[in-house]
Length: 285
Image (spheres, rainbow, N blue to C red):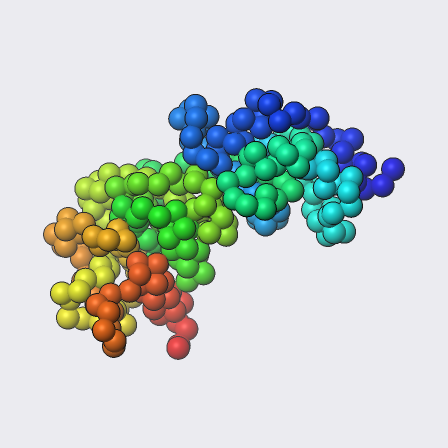
């Protein structure tokens, strides 16, 4: 028995109309009863997240693999090895058809596998606190790809987590998860009310760095040490006025050298996060 046959022998056969495929489709589309009752589960299309999920010891409830891809020899040796590990790790594994993969996928060119895992839910009570830490406040972004990119940048800059307020997008959104490249489940990401977050920042001695076109201090002139929270605003309206009322607010400006008056929120938050991260880690530019 070769490796492909061995993997298939460990999988349950799952039809295109099965409850399992329906559940996966609902998670990926963000629609249906599954998304209303299950806030912990999220889905990843492809193998890109597999190693991170297993290394972190996260619960993988479903693993779907295309039997057509396995039997057709379409997986590389490294993909077969990782797939075998996943089949042994997941609570349940399912062999489905290419047609079922296309039904589950939300994009052209469906992948050959899907992973459903469960993330830990965070709030202000269980959000980890450190003496020196960098977090991001996600204030009302509307585009999943933007949120994911911000989380990815924050992770790369040494950030410790994020808090979403005025949430417009589910944190389990598949496009958010994909564009974050693991940051959305490797870092703590909480949801809370905006005023509660403001009080929490004050109580826990955070400096709230706000990108503001009316500010006079450049973002690179701020002293980044201790607990830093960068507020990233909505793509169209920017940050909520509430943040400017906080006693710990530090308005900053990113100088614009061309004709445009501001950067995309993803680029702006990345610039500030890296400035903060480099200084907090004592790395000279």
